[in-house]
Amino acid sequence: MFTVKMEKECGCFKRSGMESTKTFENKDDAMIEANAWAEEMNETFCQKHNFAIVEEGNELIIKVEMN
Image 1 (spheres, helix red, strand yellow):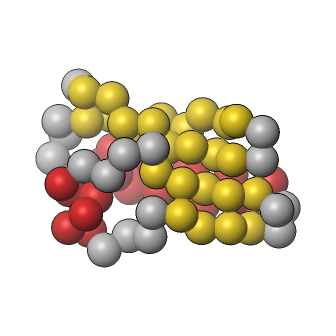
Image 2 (image 1 turned 90 degrees about the vertical axis):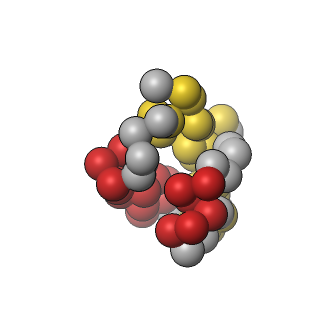
C-alpha cells in the first residue's frame, strides 16, 4: 500500500475540498495522483506556496514551501 498525503494544509487547500490523504495499491498509481495534486495546486492556488513531492518509504508526501 502507498499513501499520498499533505504535509500541511494551507488555507487554499482547506477551501479546495481536496482529500488530505489517499491510499493506493501500487506506487505508480500513487505517484500519478501525487503529481496531479501538486500540479493542480501549483497552477490554481494563490501562489504563496510551492508544492513538491517527497518520497518517504511507502508515503508520497506533498510538502508545502513558501514562495
